[in-house]
Length: 337
Image 1 (cartoon, rainbow, N blue to C red):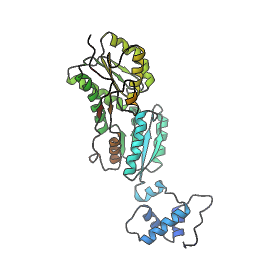
Image 2: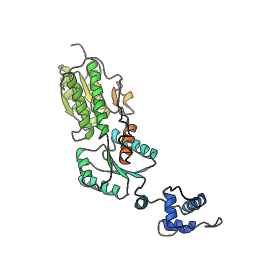
Image 3: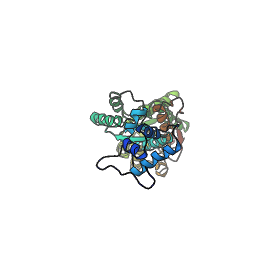
Image 4: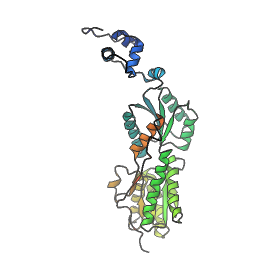
């Protein structure tokens, strides 16, 4: 390639390694070595190859590169229910953690209720030649469907594995906070029973009560939405009025928001007549009325753990994410009756 002539981009097809090699006057093997960062390439040769790629507007084909290096420098993410705060925050954190590890991400969204949708998502991700797969907020059935289609790819689960410990510890911390305030009649509003996060958070709640010789006052289930928290508020209000419940641990902030709104509509004061604790510390939690006491997970730490796990640089090298209880205005001592 001369200084005064730019190589012509081939018409009717995408630019390939052979085109770059021809334009730079090198072998396809040399182009491959430049793409994959081999150290033993002369600077002048590297510069010619890079200039040819820029002139031809060459785009790296990760799947093709994986054939030669066994690494595509790409991590696959399979996500369901990504409209919810937890999954959406997890996806953003995984992308940031992947960039820190000098990896790109490719994401496929699946309907967790549809096994065929999950299968299609797995097939799409595998077709990209990814170095590993991370599952975001899966249901038990989603995890089972994915595991049945793996071809040996390393897999990590956001909020699974080490992360399930953080979920349990966070729920336990929320429950302990209420016990320290003097509550003994503590109920729980959980999420869908087949979600991995729900399983861990329920375990943490019950474990904390058990350490103090207590049992759950009542338990209800929602679907993670504010609407489901609002809908169950009437039933919960009845247990508050007759003294069976003085505090509620809620499995996420959105349901807690709906529950507080429903209790206010039932003329019950939070936290004077009942304390409410959420989970996730979503960006709006401090602006609820009252501001919500909740649990903040180290989502970025969780994401780094997952990336380290699928790249075989962990989990030993990745620290367990530590939850933090954020105390605000929605909790207080039980009312004197």
